[in-house]
Image (cartoon, rainbow, N blue to C red; front, side):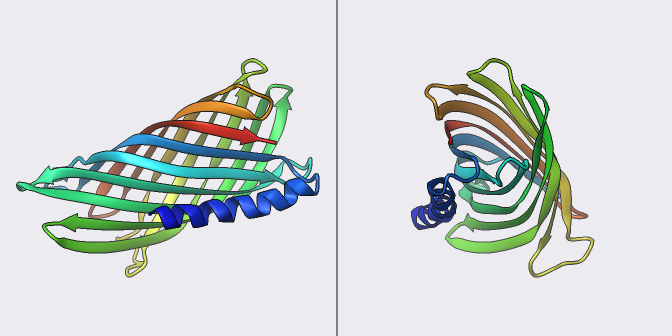
Length: 222
């Protein structure tokens, strides 16, 4: 997990540093840690593991056009007791894409985004490990509102669609909503503290899952 996080951080920071060194586009980076709640059901039985998540998210704006390139990485580790044994899920989610964010008023910005999404989950139970991988996309709308010069609220409302890599049938495709709401507080010219809530609901013809996360961290803008 640590190697993946370091590689992902490098993937974000290398192009960002190059742009910044050229006096180019604005950069908006988030590093977060939180506690998550997962509910998985197949119509017969539900499991509700809980655990932690860590991640990075960032946007690089292309000049003053409002267009940006963006990406996100989330690592999650959750577990619960099932049939007297520990059942755990270790997940890695990558998103890569872009969008646009335009000023509507001096303090309110509205836009849209789209990402390629890849999820990989290792399920461990009684010494056995099963790995599942799915890919697809998410699209949606996002906003930012500057309540004061130092306090900002932000969020996104999206639609996600994922298919298992070994089964791309319509029955196996999982679709649903992906929501995020947050509040950041500036503590210096380029550094802010933030807290946020993420909720994702996905379901196919056989299973459904709810993922909730309460998290916070540091936000860097320059």
